Structures are given as structure tokens and as C-alpha cells.
Image (cartoon, rainbow, N blue to C red; front, side, top):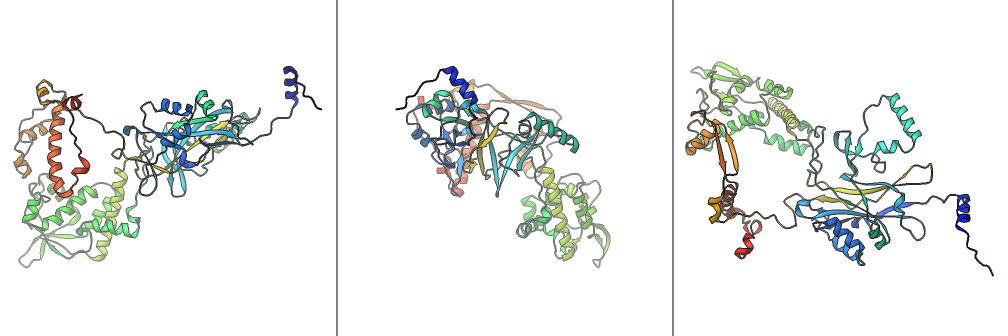
Length: 532
């Protein structure tokens, strides 16, 4: 018979110190409840959603409660949709850390030296991270090593020797700038009582689904001259017929002095002279869409091609040109008059006709116009916002840094990815709607002006002029006094006026769209309920 002898604590400590170190074992960060990727994300509609989550974790039926928070809002393509905080829906990622040994004991929270969550955008088979370089934001950048440390600086300082070696290598290479680092969001350990109630080491993170950050790098360029054949065909079809192969065309009001009051884009002008429709569209496209009158190389190339067209300004009795002007020069003078409504100080006249454009010249004009669109897009494309693409798909992934034995660096342990999700736009929320309270009629006289508009003389003259004449192209809003005005209005009055106009137009457009039952829902309530 063998009897066990209890060791004195001091002797036990001595023996433990002489024992070989505990063999290393794997640590795993898994979705809470040992579930799959579909269970990483839970949604809460509680206003104090963190406190509500922790209360649920301490309940005996915590699994059931979390299951209710995993109800899916899935689109037609089967992708999970996450609502914004303005919809009063909050998204939380939940993980648990345990040791990969028999029995899978929970990881000692004291061994977690750091933790975080990353949001990654899916792009084909790649993962993109939202990268920052010091104070500069690079935006979404493809990750060549998705399992690498998201913080390069932290990875290089795991050990003092490593840091010194990396510094020496960087000095030899002449590397001075900071490497890009992926944006890391906080991943918090749950309080001890919540972990004790579940018997798990729990970590949670609020998933960011909105951001005002934009990339400091220019947005990806679009080369309109190198589009796919179908897309290029659509763009060329959109271009004016004056930029393609076409026959000779007689011009409207040929030989007349151009006037700022011609209103070549006005429907009344087009109804009286249908040829103005195509010609006015050409001038507008040239001046506004293509920016062909600007200084860019693409604009210069297009105008040079147009200059090969000789416009007959005056002709003799036999129809032979006696005075000509190249189309490029003529358009630089005519477009500001007919589109910008500037005065005709140069005495420019409408040409007699627009010569035929050959297939070869038409192809060059279209090609040059596509080059102008490339330049226009480059100059007007806004920086990429972090979550601006409503159709983008994302995943979240958590990580922890686990301390090892003495003199050993911390180990980086990644979780699996969550299921892909998209972020629903602001207008597609399923939470309660926002209430805007309108004052009753008896209170309107009590409301004082609360917002002031500072109007320069031109706008003040426009507002005080005959709007009917101005809409018909008659009169000039600048032909009055040079007095500016400060006009104060009551914001509730503005809201009521906008509400009335909105209902009028909804009723009119409902005749066409039949949308009233979907966009306007009114229910009767008692007076006390409606005014509370």
C-alpha cells in the first residue's frame, strides 16, 4: 500500500524550481462558445450595449442569449449586413482564449500581454488592411502576409537584439520613413466575474462600421483610353457626335453674331431650332465634362485635333468660303459666350456649316476626348473613405500577444476570420426612426428667427426680381443695387415649408412611381402622444 505524503510548501517550491520547464503548447483564440466564423459577430440594440452584453455573459443561459444576438440580416446574395450606430444597432466581436491541451483549459488572462482587432476588406482573393504611416493614411493596401504582425514596430522590438539588428539593417539600406502599420482596434478582456461565470477567458471588441478617415494618397486613377471594350464603347457612345465621324452639317443661325442670350441648352430654343440640341450638348460637354478649354496636355491634344477642322465663317454667292477659322480657335471664343453667357466682345459669328469629319479624324477626336476624361477624373475624384463603398465586403480578425517563458518573446496568436459582411448604408437601417417634432400652429407666432442667411447683392437681387422673367432668360439679376442683406428665418418655419413642399411633390411623383405606401407611413396618435 502506497501512502501519499504532503510536501511542505517551502520544499515544494524548491522542487518546482528544479523541475524542467513546462513544455510549450499551442494557444488558440476562437469564437466564443467554440463555434465557427458565423458566430464571431453579435448585434445589440441596447443603448448601454457593453453593460447589457456583460450581464448576458454572467447569466446561466448565456449561450441562448448570445444566440438571440446572432440573428442574421442577410442580403439576397447571402452576405451578412451590419447596421450603423445611427440605426441603434451595435456590432460586437466575441472571442475566447484557451490552451490546446487535453481538457482545453482557459488561458490565464495574466499571460495576455496585448490584444487587438483588425478590419480587413476583401478584394478578390486578397485581404486589404487600412494602413497608416505615422500621421499619414495610406488607405486600403493589399496584405502580402495576412498572418504577420499588424504593427511592424512592435514586431521589431520583441527582443532588444532584434531591434538593434533591424536598426542596423535599416541604416545600411537608408530606410528612414516609418513602415505602414495596419489600424488596430481595441480588443478588451471581459471582467473576471463574466469570465468566471462562463468558465472562459473572454475578449470582446466593438466593430467599427463608420469612420470619417480618408486616404491621404490620391484615389486610383481610371484610364478611360484603356477601358474594356464594352465600357469604352459606352463612353464613346456618350461623346458628342461632333467628336466622331459625321457628315457635313448646316449650322443654326449661320452667319449671326453669337449672343449670350441665345440659351442654346434651353428647351424653348431647341424647340424652335432642333439643331441646337446636338450643338449645345457638344459645347457643354467640351467646356464642362471634358475641360477641353483648360491647360492640361489632354485638353491641348483635343483642341489641336479640332483645329484641323476649318470652319467657313463667310462664303461667296457660290457657297465657297471666303473667311475661315479653325474649330479649335472658334470653340475657345464661342463656348464661353453660348455656355458661360459671357459677352461677345470679339464679334464671333456662327459658322455657315460644320465640315464633315472623316473616320480617321473622328477616331482621334474620340481618343483625345477619352484622355480628357482621364484628366478630369484625376482632378475631381475624392480621396477614398474607409467605409465609403456600400458594396465592399469586410471581415474582422482578432489577435492576442501571449507571454512565454523567460527570455522568450511574446507569441502572436490570431483568431479565424469572421464571416464576410457588408456595412449597410445610412438609409437602410432597421432600427427605430428619428423623430422630428413640429410646432403646432398656435405656437408659430412665438418662434423667433433662429438662423441667418448672409446674401451678397447678386443673390439678393435675384430673390427680389421677377423669377418668371429670369426663368425665361429675360433680365439680369445683377442689374440692380449693390446692397447686401442679412435675412433671418425661423428654422421650424423652414422645416414646415419643406415638409409641405415635400408632401406636394410626393403626391405628384406618386402618379408615376406609385411609391407612397413605401416611403410615407402615417398613423393616428392622441394629441398628448403626438406632442410629448
